[in-house]
Image (cartoon, rainbow, N blue to C red; front, side, top):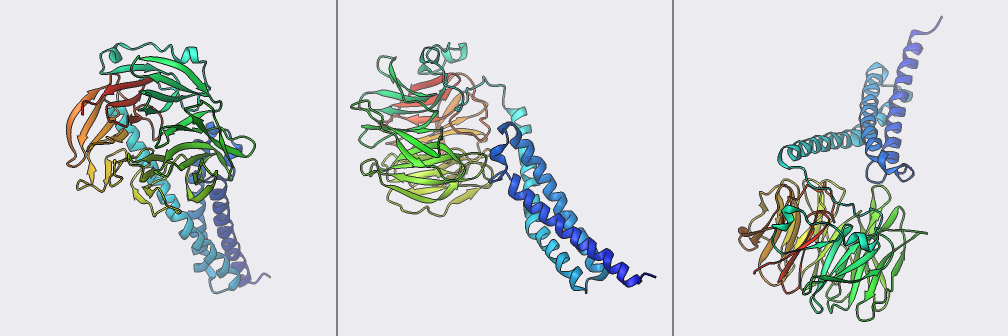
Length: 457
């Protein structure tokens, strides 16, 4: 006859082991398919990432709850035996320390996403589709053939057709607006309202910036081939491109945003294959020296203050969103501040003392007596380079609001034609704002191109 005690011990022992196995399976699920550094994501088609991570987080919650329940039952059944206690306790500990916070965060993020989607459906009218920054480059002839809509024809300023436009920067010396688009940089003469021949650099061009002396144009390239990533550095006096190439870190897939500091050194952020962390680089074009700072989240937006003494950064693809300010001579990344929700843009005042960060439900302010503006769905933000003004683009309206940045009172509106659509927490789409160095012109990405207007300030 079987010993009842041994039978009972065998049963609870298997329950303890099953709970531990469930917890370990949850940990493996987390490592393989979490939305930040999932090891299996790079080998999956991008179209499957959202579904894969969604189901992975649901599976994680179920596995960890099962681990806690089975471990608890085993301990209550016969928890004094080592073969029961050890696996049961480990399974419960993993379930509590790993499963509970991550599962709760996942559920919370899903609810926030649903609330955001509901608000967008109710508040934002349908917008014209905006070409993706990662779309295939189109010939220059077709880039310059975008028709002007009736709404845009009534808007302030002037329209610049550029189908694949991503980012832009104004050269005050020549009064030329440089626009990254596909594999080329378009050159638009603001005074004569026509184009010069484009700078064909190749790749998938993204963020763009000018050196303090306005002789060097830096352009991020989203293509990462053969274990290398690069930025293009165009000498505007000779027109020659001298790309700076770097060894790609694990899962790094190309550069994303660039910003020059006061010492003419270039800050560079990157993208990622999937979701994860990438290095923040500081590159010296004169000596070719590279400084690797602490890792940041993929697609971090970099923006220099007008005096170039500070670089504002907003880390994308993470909640709560992290942002902050780096002094141009820094050799390490400062401790970031955080706010609810995902970030994708940041504005920094001319002296670097004030930061403005769109966070969907409000505009978060740092260094201001006003801590936030109760304005939802801000998609574009920039500061006047010489005066205390803040420019904001808001989804659901065609108006660009101009605020006194010392009091945060709205002083005027500029109508840019077509209403902006919510960009879904992605930069370099509709509503991206840049101001000329003299503060005369404000430029904004709109459907099919860029619109420029005199600020009147």
